[in-house]
Image 1 (cartoon, one colour):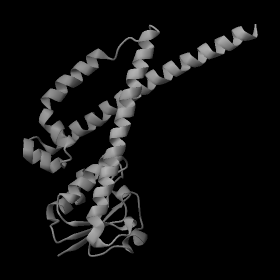
Image 2 (tube, rainbow, N blue to C red; image 1 turned 60 degrees about the vertical axis):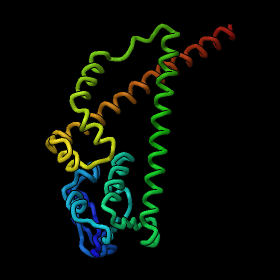
Image 3 (cartoon, rainbow, N blue to C red; image 1 turned 45 degrees about the vertical axis):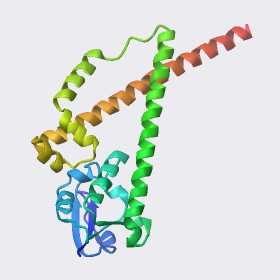
Length: 224
């Protein structure tokens, strides 16, 4: 049995005393920006390689794994696959129940992500329907979407592996694609999803602005 503690510190940090005060066993200190996903960090990948069923890993809080729900989710799932005890110290639970707590967090994050995805899709459909009814819908950026579809088809295996929560190294070994290319695919997927959400927001905002204009005009007419 081995005990480890994972610490992520800012690249510009000069003091680690406060974090190290809670450290147990062997320290794995990661000096990187929080925006770098856990599964892509060098020290984190070392941990994922050596962690075993009888080991215990201590992490201060889940926000040490990333700066967004998707990165945190993938980090937690990768850690659980090692079969080690993953003790999130902020949860303040006994080690015997540590992994159960992590699984509960994973379930909650997945539920929130599914809700968010559904809400975005629903608002997009509603926004497009209103824009079509008002004769203002011109369609999405067709060329870009077609290019993305072709790119997705070429990188199908990597994308499916990413969606299953595998680490960059695991995907590279499974598909034969280099780690750098896997990271590029991950980045482009994020950018495309962000663009889709932005388009949905713009459609929603445009419809809302038009509705406000109509209400103002009706109020002006009523005052004449």
